[in-house]
Image (cartoon, rainbow, N blue to C red):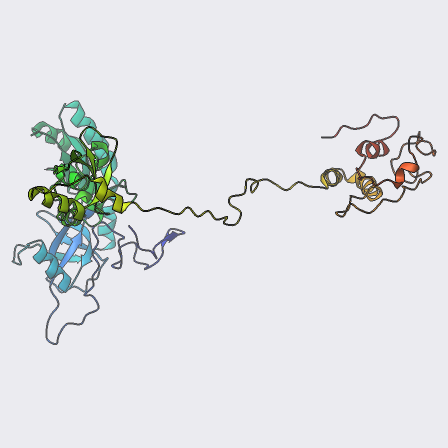
Length: 465
């Protein structure tokens, strides 16, 4: 989840220009918006001397700003550790740190480590060099664990900022004796090794990913407390108990099943029990389905499992009250008929969407003329002859009622054209009839005739493509 204004172009960050560590939105995992940053402190009150620092993959800790350094969100600082120092980025400063420490139940005392200094360029280079070793080191660590036949999975490796210690995060179903594994790692990687076991949810939070909803995982962006999720949450929400759909990337039930559970519980408080039977003169009705959003319940008679009748919760409560008072109820159809609403079918033609020919292309009347134009554009030498042919045979008019004049017989018409046949005679075509010219005739261009004019008498006519 990144800022709306952030982006990269030519390897330079855009938006807030803070290299992806802005305090306005979610550039980082588990980021916090400092809504108290623009508030001024009362006269004589000092700023809260603690800061929150984020390390790799959402690991956050609180540190004491003992030297009153001018720190702001996004600064890279060197912090105190048991041995050496670590490098991290500042995420919160000021009074909001007090709220976070109270929320996470962190006591303010002298045991909290302090911030040494703002990281220098040399510190950052050593930190980056140590981070580049983590991926190949993780592959080699998994190979060693497989060779020793240990039932564990190395999920992540985190180097300390000065490169003096490496923390291995692993998951395992059972207790693992990794004493031999630590010796192998110390000999292989030449550094101090620390093994830390985490759960499956913590592993998914550290590694991150995309959920089935298309967004980043909640545990890697904002969710910090992992509450227990049971299948009862899925039952209350009328979800199918399919483990493939209910499980997240960690293999456990999705944490989002608890997000709307309270709303469903409030809505179900007005519903009668689903195992409640309705007793009528026609028979006993059993609940088959419940729609929480619409407040409907579907009942059917015992033995007639295909005929369902929809009732509202008020109608079901009314029938149950009559059953308790031992009053007779004719049938549930009397109540279900009140919910039947006749829907009027209004068909409208919206911009011709109901037309069967809306996707058909209109027929071109000058189809042959377009072919000649295309052919003339491909063969520039024959452009003059095609143009003259099209002029001699004009296309039919839209009216179609005017009679065409008889075609004049030109002598030596083909002799004046370039590339005309030398063997053609000047005599007109004997097959033409002058009397037929008075009839209304639909004009059709003679393609064969135009092809013969454009070719020499010695050569055969060219074939069309």
